[in-house]
Length: 404
Ligand SMILES: *Cc1c(COP(=O)(O)O)cnc(C)c1O
Image (cartoon, rainbow, N blue to C red; front, side, top):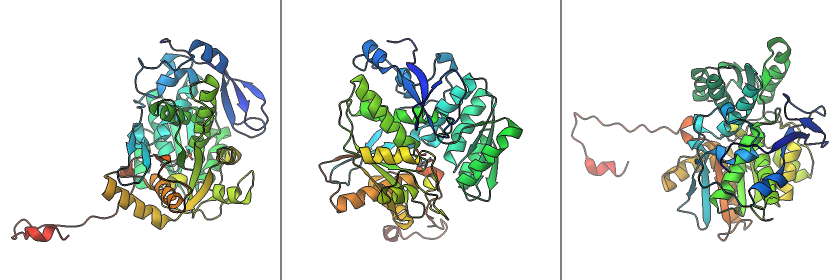
């Protein structure tokens, strides 16, 4: 099937199951919960009993039947490439890094915001706003500028400088706010009446998750329509984890994969671990994490509106939630860079730390096929200093260079 066709049919409240029209603009459901896009999977299964994608470009639009965009002309694109699985060479088993740093704007936020801004634009929305730890705002700004929309970003004041400047350079109006991302979210929500902007916060509109879902479809396709044994995912708002879980369910209903599921492991920092605490306590929802702090800014999310969906996916998959120390994250960035030649972002490095801990205590073995999500390029983050200097006017002791 080569023509453009979406099999999306309606939206459904993730808490009550109530249905809503996909032809209208939506944020949260009336119950205050995320809306999920539903598809006519039976019709798609009949039309494409086996995945038939070989003649399509290697980007996320190859899964258009499972995306909400109705017309090809609506699509905003900056080249949302299929990201590689890079095998680690120093690990005992098969450990694959899904390198999302290759995407436009250098992070996997491009997947979600590409879809969200495309849909907002197709509804004629002219102004979008977002609370952001950096990468989401940058991705929103890029796609909004492409569409000729105005974009407003609100970021915690200690967001990495490069992210703030990236947003501004890609056409956003961006403010540093003396608070955390949930405080920024409040500003976006309360500014709606005065500014008439569309709120693109994580899971507060239905389409970012559909973009993030493509991580799961793409992974299954790359593994020959199979899933790995375990996925370590750096969890902030949890869109990616929820999205992948949704993807696997849709793929099974299509008959494209079987009933096997990966263990979903939600990785957080010990400085901000609301999901880990709720998982340990057996709670359905996660309480706000006070005084959140971590070098992995992408997962500094003290309260997640999709908490119950994250926890459900982790439990249904027989996975777990785990917090890692910032000092271990920083050491892992250096170790993986030196040993593997791979520069991880701190959030990606957190997944490596959690994987190593699980390997050490036997929850993961060398027989498992493991996927770690490196969700942004390591180049977006401050790096450890490297300060060696040479004076070219002095004699150089070449042998001493090896001891540096
Ligand atoms: C946003 C972000 C995360 C968290 O992703 P969610 O799907 O929202 O949980 C992790 N790492 C980086 C680099 C991010 O930008």
